[in-house]
Length: 334
Image (cartoon, rainbow, N blue to C red; front, side, top):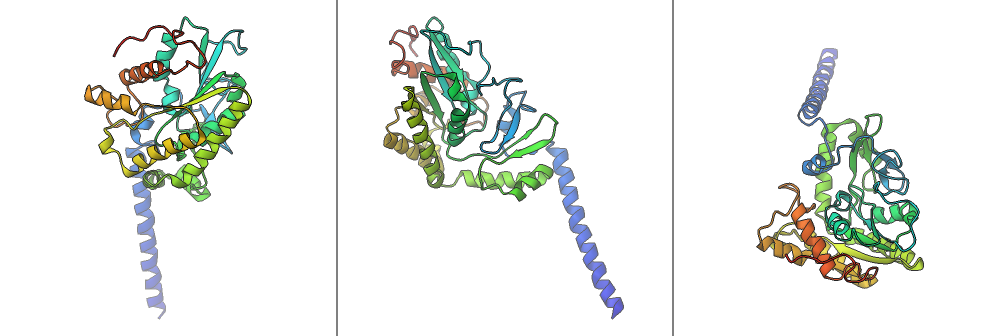
């Protein structure tokens, strides 16, 4: 009896050892093959700024935010620029809120060039990975101090969902930021240690991103309503630039189509002026233009497409509320 009992425990012990050994082998292989296992798709990680490491900190409300005053971002939460902090008399300030598309500044760079002879300043408050709720909270806590005359929020198809992100802090330690409740403390703890678990979590989040945005749309609408009310109270202009997914409309997923429809519905209900860039994308597809930063990237426009987006905005009356039609020079034909 004792011998049989010992044999059972021995088999259990061997089984447990095999499971642990297999897990450790898989973890080791994952770390070897993917030194930084990320929750972003690899093309997003590859195109993050070179100073990503040590440039972000955990924030209890936003999940994470840039480090201020010691690198790329000023104490106002905006990308450092050449403009003085104190606004000069007669100068119009336009502040852009948004995620990585805003942060990378391709579209706005054209506006800066076109308006370089005008008394207008373009400020960049874009943060990689932020969604609309985070962008609004970011403005209310820091960016309002820019004292803008006009705010443009760049809205993308994936802005209904806050994506957990992985980054290294200034001590070189991996941090998993948790901007929404769907990422549990257990998820954060395991993802902070296990590369293998991060891959599992990334797959889970990818499935979530394909879900219907109706539930998170309620939060997005509330955030936009809050921002609109705040800006109206302070006499600040407000509009939205709606970006498309950078592929033919017939290839959009059910989620992507629903996200676009819901975006337009919210903008109309809140009576927020918006500029829809889908027609520009469709024309660019017919022209066989290079659309994206990299082949797998469906979110970030190429320099050529960004220029076309910016020219379309100016032709369609963008900034006429703050500058006369000729205030940014002539716009060449396509």
